[in-house]
Image 1 (tube, rainbow, N blue to C red):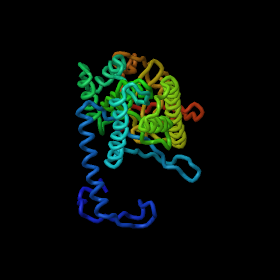
Image 2: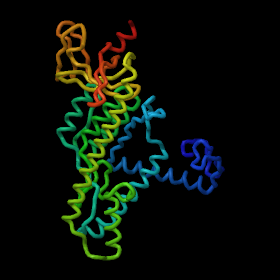
Image 3: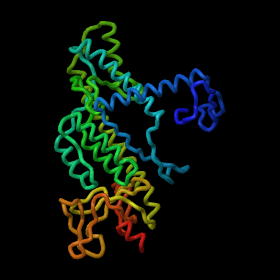
Image 4: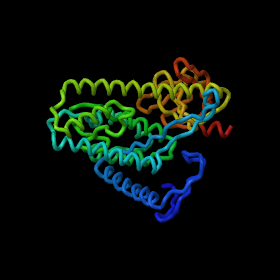
Length: 354
């Protein structure tokens, strides 16, 4: 509905059976159409205000898989956040923020669960700067506002470019981890002074704690035990970390499994990292990342150059640098270790010429 640019607020809308939850066509009342379009307008206003206040927009592409009847990956696609997703996101943020602000401002001494996000670590930001300068980008880190603004500008500049996923990933890694705590320090990434998780009690225990505390304070019962809730916060943050690790591991597993069926195929990739032992390459078409060992690169003896983020041949001076586009072929797909080893075919321009 929202993506339909020609849709008018007074227009009757038909939901086709292929996307209908009932499996049948049905018409949406004008009042519902008007309400959703108005909510979308408000969501965009809320988002603009967050960005103006210094929030950081991480709209990273998610890797998803098409599975066959046996749950084996037969294709890869990317899930991007659309206006409908952003509409829901903004009003969830508003609800979370409103609850935290209600307690934090009116009852600052009461025990409560906050979702906090500290300012980025200076060393991690410096490391990010060193890498993005290889692509011609800069950051302004004079103060908190300039840092967040320049990070947003960076994320906009890389959209659609070969280095986008690399820069998006590195920018996220430069941030502190958001955690649960009873000690409110605000949320840097959202530019909120007060924030909590309130909207998903069906899947997150911290939301249940927030509901219980809010209900308790509305009924004016005695204050909760801060030490006990802080312990629960630490446990929730630790479990969240484990869940994130499991999610990343499952994606990596499916990527390796997918690539194991494409061992004789050349793939275009971008060099996403260079180390003493190898060159990491992320494939453009499916975001699968693997490594080419320096000792396996034919034609020369390659050495890691830290200043240039490159592997350079001692004799030929051929360079494989961070951000270079290269063709690779799967050498080994290790499902147990969830690792991909690539053979380097060559630079994009050299392979296409030959």
